[in-house]
Length: 211
Image 1 (cartoon, helix red, strand yellow):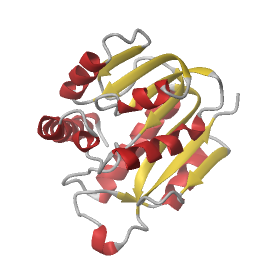
Image 2 (tube, rainbow, N blue to C red; image 1 turned 180 degrees about the vertical axis):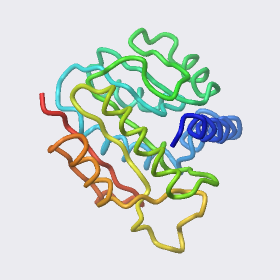
Image 3 (cartoon, rainbow, N blue to C red; image 1 turned 135 degrees about the vertical axis):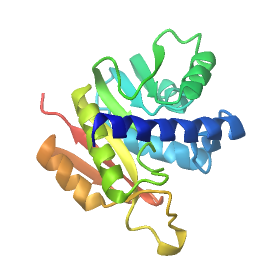
């Protein structure tokens, strides 16, 4: 995908999530999730990538910063960077965590620093009117960003192509977990894990770097 096409896609995504935030506020529905329980479950799966006591983390597609709350309750965080293409989301996160000195938020498509870990939750789900080929190209480009900006490893999730047909929606992207596992294994690391057994219509992939 060329840069102009990618910018157009990101503008559409930013507008979609800004509208969700305006409608539902700083809640799971405001970032297009069904509720807090499923949001917590997917955070638990993504955070399997963390295997050290203190760490830095880039949260790509941070929304209003819900992952920061999850991390703060469970881990010792050296620094957290939240990145989102929606300026409205970033403003909400900055206001919400203005007293948290270890947390920083930027409106951008990629982190401006390398961290120990990178996490992307839910950013590959809403393709709007894009074709499978266009969205897969965006997905690959974004995984390259995660790889480039993480030192120890990264984690991401996708809706699964194994979803029940009657529950699938045409504006959502359902990825093939086997295809993405193979892609990550060949492109990024020998140490790749796929989790598809936690009760949601999605999967999580962890990519650990060789240090």
